[in-house]
Amino acid sequence: MLNKSYKFYGLEGAPEKVRRLYDLLSGIWCVETCAPRLRQKWSCENKTCGQCSITAFLVQDLLGGDVYGILRPEGGVHCYNVIGDRVFDLTSEQFGSEKLCYEGNALQSREVHFAKEEKRLRYEMLKSRLLEVIPGHI
Image 1 (cartoon, rainbow, N blue to C red):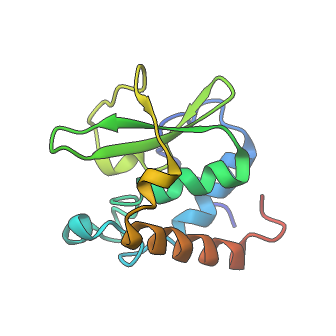
Image 2 (cartoon, helix red, strand yellow):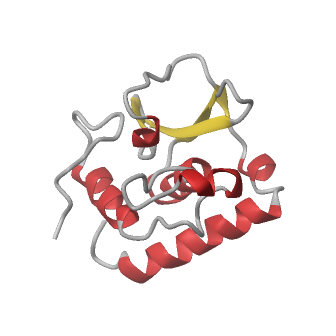
């Protein structure tokens, strides 16, 4: 059964496969896949918190495109996807009503992000969990 409560950036006009991927990810994002520095903010009501880079690179694996990053005031980078001429940010709800700027941001490198072992391990965990539920769903 698909989750029909979509709140991610790029929802309007999003292909059904993007919505289905969001549904599957919504069922597997967890505190263990959340960035350690944000775990105190993660909850079942805020599942996308701390999931951006590992999710964006996983979306890239499945649907192609590029991963870009928005510099955050606290010094971090929030990652999102650009596929063709469409921008999708499946983890944007973590910012509530804050409006993010999706223009003029830097292309992100998987090698740079995954140089951090904890991030690579979280990505591998998310990917493994997704592969368990994905057959026939995308």
